[in-house]
Image (cartoon, rainbow, N blue to C red; front, side, top):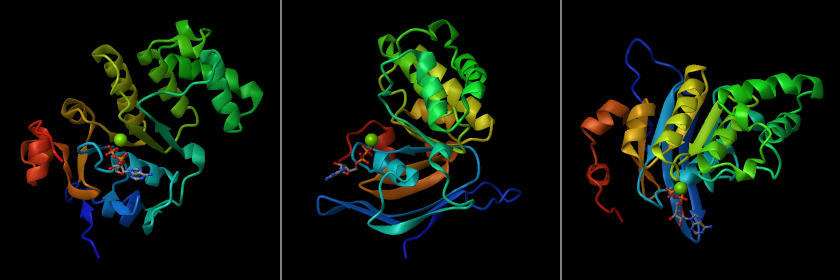
Length: 248
Ligand SMILES: Nc1ncnc2c1ncn2[C@@H]1O[C@H](COP(=O)(O)OP(=O)(O)O)[C@@H](O)[C@H]1O
Ligand SMILES: [Mg+2]
């Protein structure tokens, strides 16, 4: 049985995990691209997955989201597998419908089963949350990358999900647009949404994450509180990654 790396939250606060990954294996092209991943994720806060390209970060998010099934191992949610609208995903490149910002948000709420008469008020809340009021009636696809990602973020939050999974959500954005997305992530976490973030930026992980999971070649090499990880990474691979060395 592989060792379960658990985040130590301190003695006064020993929560049961919200999500337990147990011995996850995912085979692709005849090899294990996720290779015995065991991890307990606590009930609240922001966890960042870091690691070089190809480490298995995106596939791990997809496994947690239930978009793909593992070859072996289990994913256990303490409160039962969430409904699709309770587990929201945001990717690096937003995929928006070819209609207005307002209509994109309305469509998401309709998909989640919200009644027509209730939707305008919730759309207005989401527009305010994303500071998108002035852009509400513009076609979503003509917005800047940062504006589109704000739409994708508030759309992801539309149904008040329990889990928010973010796969390099600011990788193609400038610092100002990045700051706006980070503010939305912090707000969601403060509101009790369990956030799992894939990021390459150590600065972003330090700003947002409570704990860090470092993946390399499909294996979880470290899981530690963020401050500890950045001060004293345990593995040579994590040290090299943080130093900016090309890891293969
Ligand atoms: N369908 C596939 N066939 C073969 N290899 C795959 C397939 N899908 C993903 N992989 C490999 O799995 C590894 C992990 O992918 P991914 O989770 O996307 O990495 P990252 O950490 O960069 O997000 C990569 O080496 C990728 O090439
Ligand atoms: Mg990826």
